Each structure stands twice: as structure tokens, then as C-alpha cells.
Image (cartoon, rainbow, N blue to C red; front, top):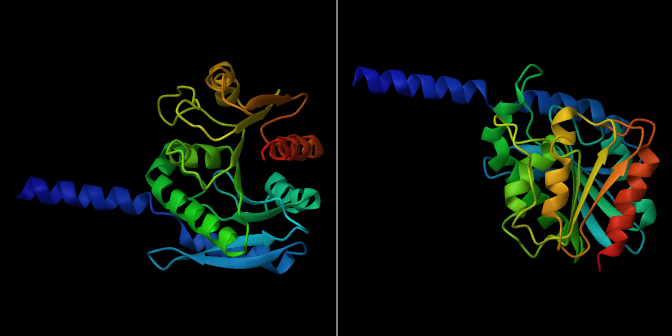
Length: 248
């Protein structure tokens, strides 16, 4: 009995340590929302009643609704994510950039694995919101940890997602093995920078091989830029736009 109780305490402690940081999310939202010029803040509610921030940007005669998913520890209007969510509507793609689960600043990447189910729940809520706004086709654009968070969801081959642009896909958490797109039927864009992170570059060949034979899927490398497409944001947006244009 004592051993069981100690195990329970350890499990609870580990869970608490890895808890998604809702306070940090609120701080991000309080900081971001007053400065939104393009788009509108919306809040989506999870089953546990936690409300998270989304930024919806309409597009005239929108071809698709696009969910934009950021990486670890940031917010839905950060840097390149803000660029994507604001620029894609110029090309006819309405965007909904959503806050994903975040942990403490010093959390290790491996700690995020426990929060993948919550990330998928948020993605599903975002898709539902876009459909509620009349968007019949839905695409997902993800970056870094955000790509890793939803990879298994995409492998379910759900018809509700018409295209997936994944930017800077990192290696698997813990093992460092390359993440591939085996078993995913949705058209995929694998986009990364020539000077990307080692864990992105090391798996590039395997990711490309896993795209062989998948209609409309391709791998694109943007020269002279890094994991965040610094100084090449327009090339990043164009690559995503061209890919979405190819999906009917």
C-alpha cells in the first residue's frame, strides 16, 4: 500500500510539473490582443472549460480556411507565425492562428509529448470554427513543435483536412529519429530552411522519401535561411501559397 501511494504521489508530481501553463497563455493573450491590427481575437473553449486564444483573419472570396499552428513556447501572432496568418489572406486564404499548449520557459522539448492530445483537441476546435464560418475546405500550416504535435492526427487520414504545410519538422522527441509522412494521404508540403536546425536537416532525406508517390506533395528548401525563415519570410509565404493553390 505504501509503495502504491508513493507511486501515486510521483505520478501526480510529474503531471503537475508537466501541466500546460495556462497562466503563461493568459499573459501572452493579454500582451498580444491589444496590438492586433489585422484580424480579430476569438476564444475557443476546451472540454475542461479552458478558453484559448485564436486570431481569425478573413479573406475576400476565400478558397480555404487555414489553421496556423505555432511551435513551442510562443503565441499565435509571434514573428513568422504572425506573418503567415496576416499574409495568406492576401492570396485568398482565411486564417485562424491558435494558441497551442505551452510549458515553462525552461521545459525540455520531451515534456511537450504529454500535451499532444490537448493540442489535437485545439486543432479540432479550430477546424470546427472555420467550418462554422462557411469554409468548406480546410488546410493546416504548422511550424516546428506544432508540426510534431499534430503528425499522428494527420495519420488518421481524416477527410476534413485538404492540405498540410509543415514547416521545419523536427525529429521525434527523445529518440531523435526522423519524422516521416508514411501513412498520411493528405497532400503535404515539407518546407524548411537550408540553415535549419540539425534535427530538421538530419531527417530531410527520409521525409522527402516518404512523400514519393503522394499526389501534390513535395519538399521545398529555402536557401540562406534558418528555422524561422529570417529575412526570407516572403519566400516562406509564397511557398505555402503556391502549395495551397495546387490543392483543389
